[in-house]
Length: 303
Image (tube, rainbow, N blue to C red; front, top):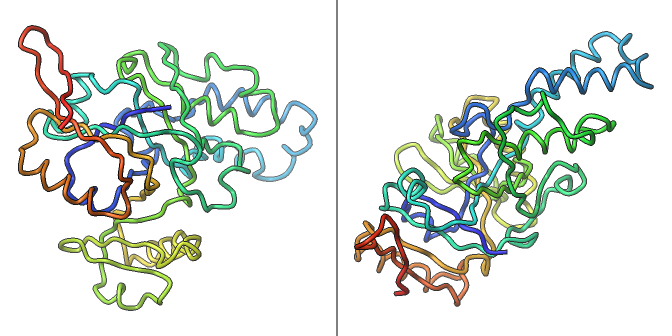
């Protein structure tokens, strides 16, 4: 399946093809991936009024489960894609007013390299993109049976993460939903300059600009260390403003579509980096958006 990613023109992307794992709390729609109280109460009623009703007698069990239902999706990040590379609203909103680009991505369960042992076993992660459903009613008031009547939360979380309001239907969105522990790279602000120097040989820290640093495992075998390093550093106030990313595998990108307002100089620089980098495949095709003279439409010309 080929899907598309709208994004600003970031020169750093052509050095390292990273896509952000965006937590639900940082999505631009405040309703997005937020379990409603109506849905939570339905799940609680099933869970505690059924065979496990004795669990309610345990102090704090019901309150703890309610909290987990409310906040469980915070352990995951979303990578949003679309089936439509021609949408003028999305070019304006997500691709810097046509000064950005769209990636054409071959999407399946091998688009990214997975290393967190719990990713597939947890039941919530989606290692293949799932099509978003649109509705004028928030999840909770209407829920599919399998999101309520099961002694797990897999379908409960999935239903909230994959349902959006009708106003977003123009996005024709698909989503990867992945555990934040799957991150390959973190970009963070480092408060204490010597923190980077104190990291051992298993963690690589690269200065980007000002107080911003790129943090990653030094080799693939050590990637499971990254979440622990980040958690301890955040807990100690040594790093902040942490953003997590997945790295696209070498042959995942099929094409790059530059917006009509991207300069020829930037296009040439980007192509040069891609064509000389071992992180990108050799068969990527390059295009530039062309504005129609007759309609409010764009098309693409291959470069």
